[in-house]
Amino acid sequence: MSSLTLPAAILEWMEKAVGHPVLSATRIPGGGTRQGWFIDVDASSNGNGNTDGIGDTGGKLFLRYSPQPLPARSAFHRLATEAEVIRALGGAGIAVPAVYAVHPVEEAVLLERVPGDTWFYRLRDPDEQVRVAQDFIRSLAKVHRLDPARLDIPGLGPVRSAREHALERIAQIRRRATAPDGSIDPLVRLSADWLEAHVPDYDGPVVLVQGDTGPGNFLYQDGRVTAVLDWELCHFGDPMDDIAWLSLRTVQDTFTHLPDRLAEYEKLSGHAIDVDRIRYYRVFAETTMATLTPHEGPGVPAVDGEQRAAEQSAAEKPAAEQDVGNLMLYLQLHRRLWLEALNAVMGLELTKPVMPEPAEPRDWQPLYADVLAMLRTITPRITDPLASQWLKGIARMVRHLRELDACGRERDELEQSDIALLLGYHPSSLQAGRDALARANAVRRVSDEDFTRYLWNRVMRDDHVMRHASGALHFRTWPPLTDVS
Image (cartoon, rainbow, N blue to C red; front, top):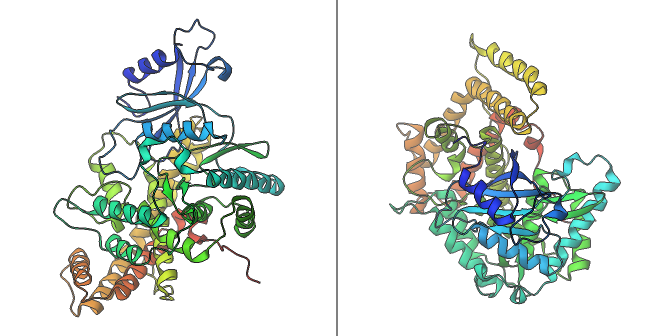
């Protein structure tokens, strides 16, 4: 079965659930961890289902679907739990899609297809940008004013203190990151240790935290938010947790002047902005992003997730199921933001290291430019949105390969020198050096501060090599939270 077609059993389930025949199913770009599909049903037919309101949609629905079962230790909720959350929020007056059906076994949920655009950067009118951003802040503040104990969301468990929820989630991070042989990525271990030792002293109201909240995860139209999407990482906790996620989403898709929005949030929600807690939860958010799925065995550590994803795509998948170029770009962005967040809370005051210089061009270097020129010619002729988006991902990969070809060897040599300085000897290979350094840090022969400096240099050089593939994202970083007076 192609990744661009739905299984017959899922089509049959949808028809039975809504009582109308499916006319078309079109996979759309994006969707993060789950696929997104536009589903059109014949709402004019004599339906035999028991779902109300299908006719009001014009037969236009939206399917969230994953062909793979959710791993037992995943950070994501099952779509059935996400549907519980959406229904509870809809009943509380929050703008969310209606839930029409939840598959009893598969990871599939059929939702209302709410009108609106997703990507905030496509708004060109500055005044409309502010109107939409302000409406989102009103929605977020409304969610944070809800009493989570009164929401009917059994899948999230009981409401406890913010500290208890934070410690529980840190323990979950450790469980996801620990392989069956007991190994754990050193940066995850370092971050989890720091998070556990610095849980904020906050005993205020606990809220429903969306997680990954902000631009890109809501729909907007005519100056207002039409629906808040993607509750797969939601949990109970500190309201500043969501503000940290909002500041993260703001890096990916610029979201007006954040200090203005946070001042509005403070007034609307009744929760005071606490910069230190937000910085703490920025580290928490990036550590979560690095451990979304369980580490099931030996392999490349989380900090090498970009390489692992690329290798898996080439060697294990008969056909691509996601935009690997886009995945590569965002994995690198999150690695850099993770180190920047740690640098801020640990007070290391790290600066950019020496960067690799390009080697003398090889005979085949001009071929990269030829490939990119061909892609620029092809892309405007592609009418399928998914194919067009993935072609851009291919172009990103080609740009990155060009830079790796030019200065990847010197980048690795610089890293080996950093490792040798900390270990006191030159390892036999780069991977052997990385492994030895991680072991030395685990037993504190190399301090967390020195290990973080090493990782900072490594990630910043990787970011430099990926700068042409990353485009504007290369220059973005965590936004300010307050205006400097």
